[in-house]
Image 1 (tube, helix red, strand yellow):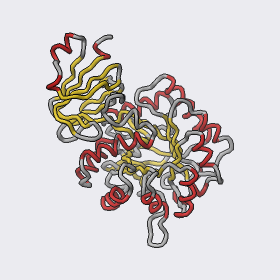
Image 2 (spheres, rainbow, N blue to C red):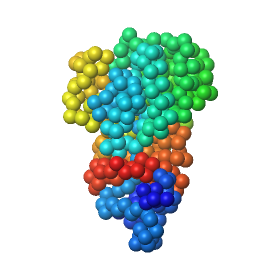
Image 3 (cartoon, rainbow, N blue to C red):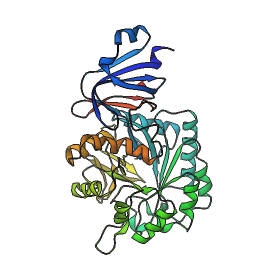
Image 4 (cartoon, one colour):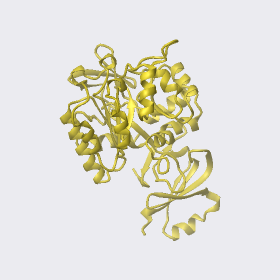
Length: 388
């Protein structure tokens, strides 16, 4: 076994998913964490003689790599425009420099043929064990036109014949589907759940009662909480009220200082059961570039700070990265650092059914790691123990 497969990773501080541990080290063998212990307990000189590669970080924090399950693009690539293995790889690469070590690339509402193309490309990429790829998120097109957001009205339609078979054709990866529950035929959400597909509510004008029915049928969570969904009101709790009240479902939250007001974000984090809110970026193609505009469905989209807008001022995703989302959560909202990190790693892993494999730096977990400097800026990442 060569030294690349045996590493001792020493950190000034390591967040294992529960606590921040000073002056600790991870032993990693073949990309899997073997142990976590104080550096003082290790004989590093002997370890080097025994063939271990010693990697040392003398400041900042080592933490589990971030997991983003809503990523439309990055590196100048929008998945809808490049639904290929090359497109997937470019998006993953762009976000990795910001601490995201695994993701569900996301296609927004498009034609059935385009959906088929991206499922096929994802299957090929998964068969090639593309680092950082967990599966696919299909956001739409089965939405309520009243809550379309930036999705093209011409793409929003009833459930297509054959889509269940298309969904089932994604092999060896996670499929997340965002739809409007009130637009789905009775039993459809249950069919998806039974096929192992994660179903999230989004772009929906459902009533509280309709969401209760969907939750009972197998709805797993809520895409970009607050955005493009019926709001919480005094006598009509709507989708937002149902989402915050429910203890079992997960919810994504876009913290780019535009999608959700700080007070609303804090209310949701306090009110929903701990461990059920996940940071997501809803990132578009400019992430990882200096681009200030791009095209979506042929429309000109402008980038301002971390947010994207149509010429009419409609939100069109974000230019947010996960490290910025963590900083916004911790420094902007005042959420403790450990909880902000969990919202970017442990809780998304839980949401995706990967709680025994990803999202924490614990023995038996995959060595997906990000090093944050004292200002919480990413400097290096590792996927399967392989550093960038």
